[in-house]
Image 1 (tube, rainbow over the protein chains, first blue to last red):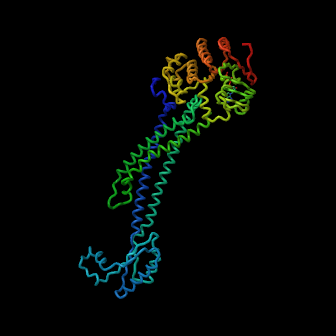
Image 2: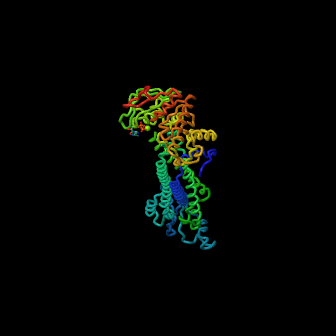
Image 3: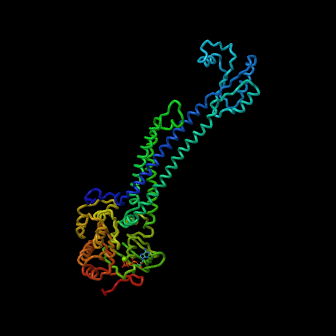
Length: 296
Length: 223
Ligand SMILES: Nc1ncnc2c1ncn2[C@@H]1O[C@H](COP(=O)(O)OP(=O)(O)OP(=O)(O)O)[C@@H](O)[C@H]1O
Ligand SMILES: [Mg+2]
């Protein structure tokens, strides 16, 4: 295409660097792939964060001590359990369930007319743990010694390592994001360096006619920033589409089906193209200024 | 304007030129001659700080060349028009865009009419939309001269600007440079062409510098 010398394009500073089709496509592709992966890393982080919060909340709920003893010992053993709980670290509060509450619990199974008082039902003691939680094994040993009929039922406890795992998964997600950003910076640096090296003669000529480093760098930086942004926008769009197409979290709420964004979580990935543009800007500018130092 | 005091210069430790002292005052007209390989291009490179002296003082527009930052050098080059011996262009831009490049680089507006006028002057109006690789050697030199003077710089440095030109075109470019010199521009031309020097001396008071035995000398009346 020949240019009309009077057109505005003539003064366009961006055109002083020749277009580079191949590396341009490569940079867009890289940014798109990285953004696509980043969407999943982000989804993983957010989903495991939600999971950790949900499970941690469940953990904070009460544990139960069930006391089954012959009627004549019930009173004594209940007292022993309550005494033990009073001096157990990690217990926030505790209370024995009343007959009415027992009736409510059993109502769905036996109907409202159950003569609770006459049945040899176990006595239940509900306890709420503090944030640190109790030493379940210690309490179990103590109960075995002081109230042989008491059984500690901490059914939510098995989830504790899962919470820790979910927490780790969340940090792994964030770490992946950082690594993806680093990999993208690396690849854009390589692409920019290739573009700079291929245009060595252009840069020398620009220097000789009085171009400042910032002017020369700008032509490259603008280009790569644009490519980083466009590529990341494409990748983010595809990634969000893919996440949206994952089966929705159902009542069963398995972990994998929970992988996705909820509510304002959908806004998070929209930051990825901007981040990619910032990364591309920084990487290209650093590469350009470093290269220019070698040309007088 | 451009001032050398006991300057020595060379490549990679080996000294090529030494004991050069000279002042290129505003409005002066200098020719630079010497055998091929004597160091004419090397001397001109000092004038736009592509090379720095290995010893001695080099002053460019009142600044010590050694203490100039990269941006200082870029700005100084916007005030010096240079025709390089190898005439490098941006091959993806048209001749017109290449000639206007110093304006683009300096962020200055381009006056299309003046640009065409300048291109006509150097006989490149027909080729203004061509790409540099499509130009002949002489056409490249004319485009390089047009690029060197488009910013109307205070100093014009030309390295063999007529090397590939026929006599008629050489005279035309010389006349252009003489005109500019009469307007107060400082002109330095490196050339082998003694006829060109004689022709110029008939029009302006030009001084002739000669490089011989690694030194810069003022040539006598033997021309
Ligand atoms: N970049 C460089 N590195 C090392 N040596 C160089 C370099 N450029 C030039 N030289 C050497 O310096 C000497 C002077 O070169 P220069 O280009 O200044 O000569 P010149 O007088 O312009 O010659 P010509 O008339 O052929 O253009 C030559 O011997 C050349 O080989
Ligand atoms: Mg030379």
